[in-house]
Amino acid sequence: MREILGRRRKLSVQRKERTALLNAALTYAEQWQWRVVPGVGFDRRAGWRAVGAQPCACGRSTCPVPGAHPLDPGLLAATRDPRMVRSWWTRRPDAPVVLATGDRVSAASLPAVAGARALEVMENLGVRLGPVVATPTRYLLLVAPYSLADLGEILDSHDWVPTSLRYHGDGGYVPLPPTSGSAGQLRWVRPPLPGAPADGPGPWLPPIGTLVDALVRAGRTAPDGDRLTF
Image 1 (cartoon, rainbow, N blue to C red):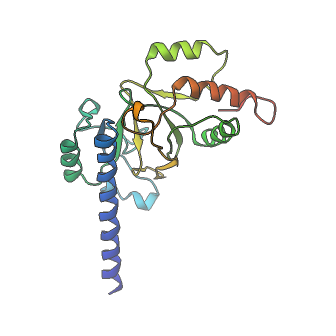
Image 2 (image 1 turned 90 degrees about the vertical axis):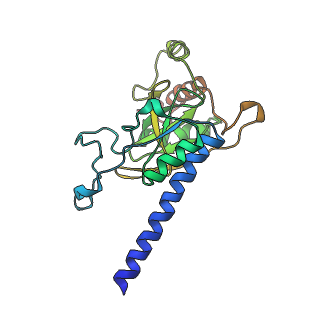
Image 3 (image 1 turned 60 degrees about the vertical axis):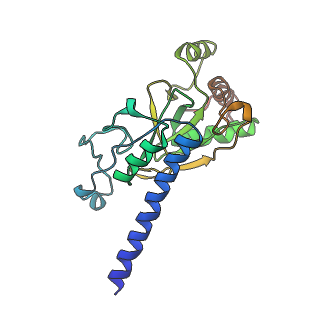
């Protein structure tokens, strides 16, 4: 009897998780006009629970982003068409949600420990942050779209920027909640907040320049009098 009840609870949790994934993907694509695509997911036949890791379904043992990267369809197929989103997540209800960056939204990321510290310092400086996602290994800071030329000018204007800051612009991608990562659940550290009507659909996003400037300021005003170690 307990075994039956346990299976029912497990199935109920799985249904809720799958519904959450589909609803999130539809929100991103249809309401916010962000282009999304299913991630490759995990190979659940490999007995990952026994070793505490989830091997990527792409088959690479050294995959840098297990489960949370496009494969089939590829990144170029990313869409904001709700019909396609429903079709994808109906066929693969456990698929992670992957955001194609560079169109209506881009991102920058820092290692998790450095990202948490940077957010605290930036908020103490009064910097307005946009949505921030915590993955098991990194903090993803969502920003307004930027070009490589814009980014180059911003970086050239500073004598120092965090070397571990990664940029996810045109042709890039990042995973979004409620996707699970290889070591845990993705979550919103700073939830998306509505933008002004003039900003278009979706949450408010800060410019990449504001983020880089804030990180530089945060490094220079660290409590120990030295630059933050990112």
